[in-house]
Image 1: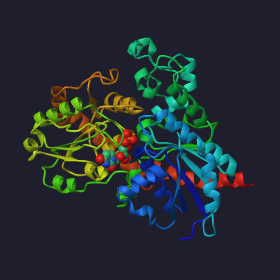
Image 2: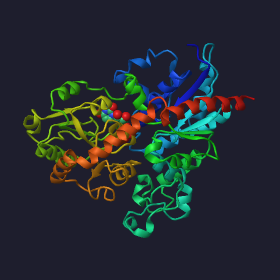
Image 3: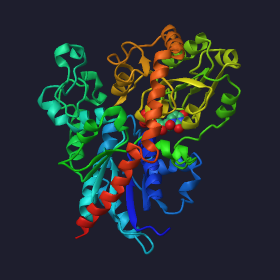
Image 4: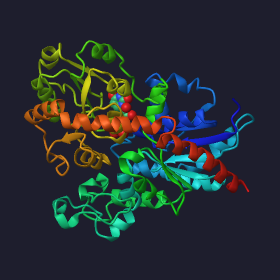
Length: 477
Ligand code: UDP
């Protein structure tokens, strides 16, 4: 099919930012868009190393553009986040130039730039190219509102967050729009935890917030039925449309499209699916802390022994870099002892794992993609947030949606060691919880309904295609 629309998609270059944008790209491709998907050279290299063949032979109607992010190859991007964010902020000129020299016959003119909400460079890019900028929130609406309204929170004294005072009742945050329940200070993006507003990361995130308030259309990877239409509408920029279109992975999954494999920065180990086939139905706890969270060697030992002592079958994703290069992170004799009951992989095909009938619960860092993937398959969660938006996700899973649990105290004490006894108890509780299971089944149904024809997210995405086409025409005049 000849395509007349063209979306340039600019993800935040981490796995949890790339995946949802790739999912959206496929859904837009299905709806008549030609897709330019932008990767940084650093991510592109990692994707190729992980076997991302689609990068060399993109599907019809897709192309990948790579641009340098301006940092040396060996720079520790995730640990030096400020430098990373600053480098990404300055990508507009190089991106514009790459786009202009690669627009050739056969590629439709650009309809819109869809940038992850933290890719502030897409504002200038869209301005220069005279096309609409779509701000795409990959975090849940509640957290996104707290970031979108960060200036308001600063003026009310909620930012920066002082951990010592975080538990005081008068510090509850009630000034945000969108019909949100009162937020705790520790629900805010963890980088707002600082002694003063002149802290470099606080300033950085406040800057991003200002830029998130500039754009022409807003898309949110969430479900209206979960967070409410009002919450999504609160992300509107000057009255522009704001639409919930998630969970974006789900329609692709239902259509048997394995779309994130081509852009995975980790090589998936599919052997765990056969292992899952051999387990009893609803018997396994799946353990993964996403793509960037790290844990100390001592903490990993406690997790290992807690999993062992829980006596439950487990599948554990232990990334190579989870202990930041520390060797020998598992207790002596552990692998031998758990051989018949546990499996450790470096990276799993997570969506396939969570949809497997043998999986009963998920011990997760509560990244938003992981949370949505989990509830979409009716899997209750034991949350263990690490940073960024994960604290709010974890608390909402437990307190608002009641589809999971957490470990006491990990929200306010970064150095807290969760002991093997706590891990064991947590695993047993989540594996046995009928209440969380019943509630998450209801949410699973709502998510399925939302993405199927006639559902809220399905219709919202169609509306987006219609409206952005009209908005683009008004820019071209
Ligand atoms: N993921 C995966 N295999 C793994 C662990 C994670 O495919 O072993 C995927 C997961 O399905 C999700 C993404 O990586 O789409 C992680 O995103 P999330 O927002 O949960 O966390 P982040 O990695 O951004 O902290």
